[in-house]
Image (cartoon, rainbow, N blue to C red; front, side, top):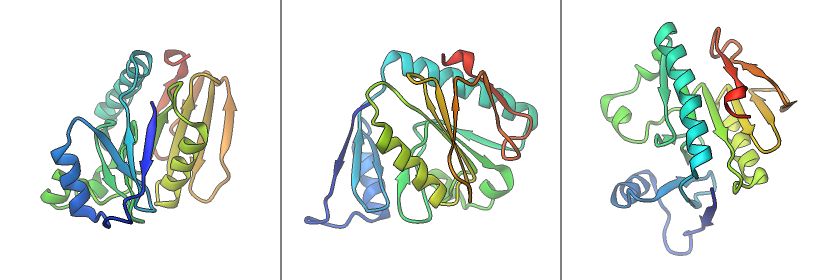
Length: 191
């Protein structure tokens, strides 16, 4: 997926409501906004990445239906993160008690909450450096656990609050740790 970053500060500052309206009036575009306020326009994924993402989200949904601990969100969901960015991870999870504290309007719009867990699945056209910066931004915004899955290199980068990034080469499975209790992702679906 190719992403283009546009700095619109010379024209106008895009506040939360303007960003929300921009997205609503341009539903054919996948937009994000980083902590600097820059607008990020992303292209759709290709078939292989879309198929893999569907497989991933299915595993999370099945686990969540059994555990009933929170809510799973897909890549179309945009979250307003604490330090100002608006991001749409490929998969996100929020504990039920945290989600239920939001108002109905906050749940309908771009929810002002940092997920407990995020996953980014790289496609061949993604920039590793940009995706790693996005993962660091997630952790900087109170997300407790993040996985960056790189199918081409068969690597998983694990991001945790207050810890250094861990890189796993060719793992067969990965554990959700205490954030996703008893969840294990079978990576044979990806590679």
